[in-house]
Length: 184
Length: 124
Image 1 (tube, each protein chain N blue to C red):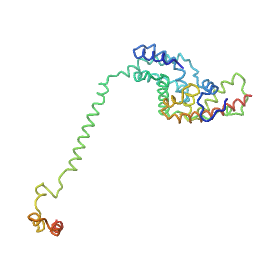
Image 2 (cartoon, chains in turn green, cyan; image 1 turned 135 degrees about the vertical axis):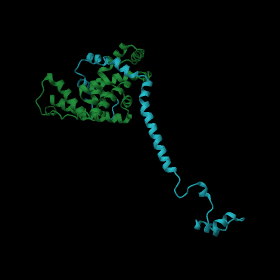
Image 3 (cartoon, helix red, strand yellow; image 1 turned 90 degrees about the horizontal axis):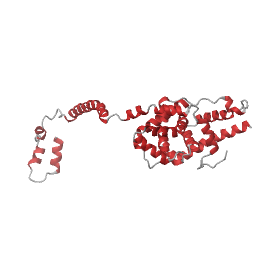
Image 4 (cartoon, one colour; image 1 turned 30 degrees about the horizontal axis):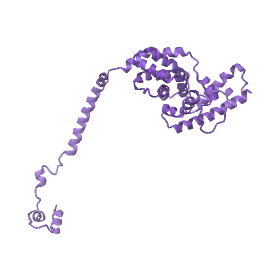
């Protein structure tokens, strides 16, 4: 995760009108913001639109950022809200049905396709989870945020975050275990 | 993959890596950054619309709403506070009524007898 002090310096420079400083912040947080938005929305293109909305919204609200707190959770809250708004507006497509060949019983994949197939399966499994649940597990297991930080990002109690992460993990771990079993 | 208790406080590195690989955008990161930065000026411009312009935008509908509320208030007030047709003036309302019971009550030196009060009320 990016250094908190560096982030604060970049925020101050952005507020002073240094465009490049904001560019560094975008570069630093773009992968994370795009993943979080994708966790909320599912579709990669929608996710990029939402991540962009989030960054620009953060730019506009930068004066409200409390520099005593870490920048990442503040930014991710804005990104997650932008993605949630976009999902509400467009009533984004329901989870697409799983490709039968991915569910199991299909032909055994060759080594080159293994990683790609796992990604497809995980995306399909994520799509089956409620948006808040998949966002919580991505923020915890992928981005490394604490339960308390995720509670702040999603605007829900910490206990709810624990519960969401627990249920998401249970589903995803089962899928991963099945996948491992299949490729043996 | 580790089997963990109900609420594990630490991230699961294996699950995290698999999810990261699944969610990582396939398109170029630099292209995304350029795309965001291309709207930098537009975003700042939008955010610095002077406050008086926003207030001016609210002004006209605000005046209309206030005028409508005033008219509605006047109409409601007239309907509620208009004098009833039976009593035309306050003097008429306060004038002593006809009848011995009420006259006795008003002119008596001593405290009224209960029967006098009741008679007065019945006559009213």
